[in-house]
Length: 438
Image 1 (cartoon, rainbow, N blue to C red):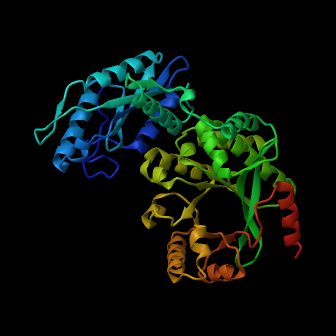
Image 2: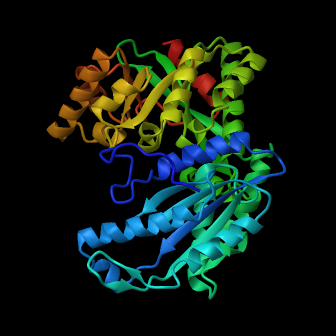
Image 3: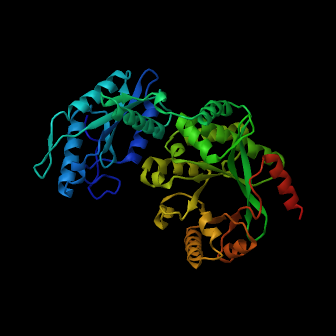
């Protein structure tokens, strides 16, 4: 197989030494292949790792680049034309092997990769290096139903391969040792997604800072086990990731959100409901059609949902994701950038995405009373967003003083404990009616 076509060396999405695309491109390619692979075939993922050695760390930059280029060329020469090669880390590569009949070709490929490095390699400084390598393999659909989970599975298999004599391994769930509490989560999450009680969306209001009216709410995940234990959202999402259930979770999430909006409209509460999407979701080219069909079933207009975008590093890197966002916008969905200002998303980023709302991260809002620097950041974001015709929401507003500051800085809406914590749907309806009657 040949290396995937690449752009000029100055492309920031490419590894400079090898010219290979990085992880975001691999996730996009895996997602594309998932849409096309036939039921009787599979997709193979191989994580190839050069184990750290003192001699590698001592290489001069030119020798380091030359060795990595040599490794890339050797791997590329072994692959089929339909397969693709990517860089994950400095001494780590990823192969996406298309249209396999079974795990056998994947296992054979890993053995061939290992054999490539049975002899020493010559670095640019004329030194000879004996490399130790390991390979881990994973298959779609057996080892995960979304791209990131498959890559994680291959890396876990590679860790197991490092400890084995063979130097290669196919993913097996037994490679992931979990404690008793995790076993419980693993058992309960599939049941929760199948409709058993415990998994729910609670609503946190968003308030217009000028009128004081509730104009929207955000759907936030809550999970309670049958024994009454409340599981924090980050642990719930980590369980979804570990089990490879992100696709099922997204469908559950969207179904729940649309049913909530249906109930709100039946109660004559006309507000926008915000739902968080991840880069996993936005790699799914079928997402716009799925949403449109579900809304049509419930007779809900797309403009009633606002989709909050997270994991912005993948969003910016992936042209396919931008295309999905534009399709969602064309269908009439509103889009928001969540946690803006936390380090990655730039001002130019806002111009590129078809979004209508920016949510300023709560870390800036909570320190706005004491930090002039944070107030300046909020003011700058507000000015830019307003010039681009976007609404600005301040997250984490917990005090009257914070509300006064974000109002003075010209934010449009606020969300936080000052107004209400996230609450079940029935409680939210009661809260909304009490506020509307003031």
